[in-house]
Image (cartoon, rainbow, N blue to C red; front, side, top):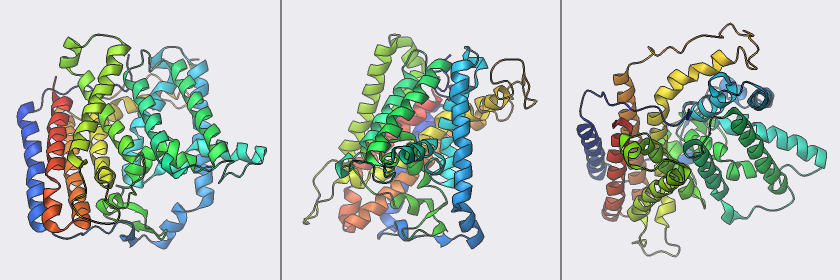
Length: 434
């Protein structure tokens, strides 16, 4: 059983896959044409945009007590998951740990962050562990014992996410409860240890899950302006506020590439032609991620056409526009998994150690597969991919007109548009093909 390895194919869309992919590409091209004609100057305000939320809401969200309680509860839950992973039933279908890790946490992090902002930065239990250990060791929790070079950027997070992708999509037993528990302990040791050295800022650079949640949170309808005020905002403004840093391109392309390989590896094309085993899967993951990376770099890698003292590095300048594409892919691939398998943690939590207990009164319940139909699932999958790419096109165009005169701004996007069309059509084909 390969838990969390995609959501299952949907070959019963009421239109052919080829037509759905073509229509998705046409929508993206039409959006680009409309933007070129109607959007001649920058409209996104980034970190300056937003309407303040009511003061009581702002006080509640910013309450240190509330944050401390929530982080404490998540730490207790994380410890319980690890204990159950090691000491609970050995069979994946009966053990709570894999379902919480892959479904409740990994998949649930996407809608939670898209709706509420960078929730994992608030709830991350590793921050609590680090704070406690730093106090015991008398280490400055903010600065650690060494500076973190600026050139490090988000590269450690890209490595963390690539390692997780390999675990989820390639490793022979990703859902084995003992493997899950061991991975969680190892991940905590690595990142808490790094935070003791470099300070708590490490988590914003190295913890792949926190970085992913923060990027997704830039699309949330609620966020903070540059002055710290909690505001309601246009998600495109939040995305425009994402700062280009070393490693940002790597993070978003690892996310898109690994999700694309997830779709490919579930298809009959892969099943009928690819050799079995982790070596072939590892090669496939690397190749697909490389293809996605190549498409993006071909769309953005060129000299800055405007003479200036410090030329703009286009791959970094447009990297934030890949975030909604990654978010759309994640929603498309994991929507049905979250609805259906997301019910299992509540069932298994009633009897976490397999002793026959029924603590919550849910033990033995079956998954309700009637929540949504296959046509609805397919529609959500296609819609998520198209909306993600359209939002990416909007933000890319606005960034272009920020950086270049109107004529150059439109022309410089042609290669990027071509790359997005290929990604859109390919993603729709992979997520819907049998």
